[in-house]
Length: 148
Ligand SMILES: [Zn+2]
Image 1 (tube, rainbow, N blue to C red):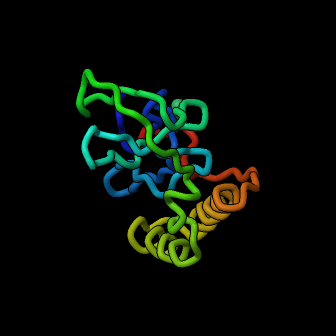
Image 2 (cartoon, rainbow, N blue to C red):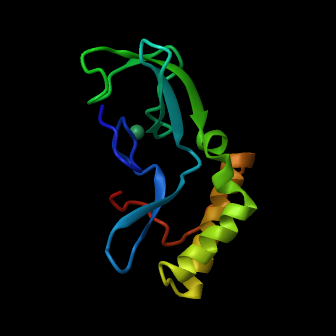
């Protein structure tokens, strides 16, 4: 399995919301989708690989042995823990982060106010789902299928 920014390690599905930097065209991961999960892998020492992301469909269970490209290849690594987005990235769903993101989207990305408002609605729906488990469908331009 291959690790890539914003994508599921199992199937390469998008597991982070992304926005497009209008100046560079670069896709930027802005917050994790609420139904994504992040595993810690034992490396056979005191060290752990943390934050290996998966979609809900692919997430391995604790105790499973998985292989990651470029990480002790040829040696299966045990899944130690699984954290859902609302646990691992809790701070990304807090009010202070939302205010900072809004300012960044307006000032750095130079997104117009209606687009920023739509992003903030998506962020708020995602955080409710991630933190409270309440799923609220919100259409916005935060990515559904952009490459990350
Ligand atoms: Zn997947």
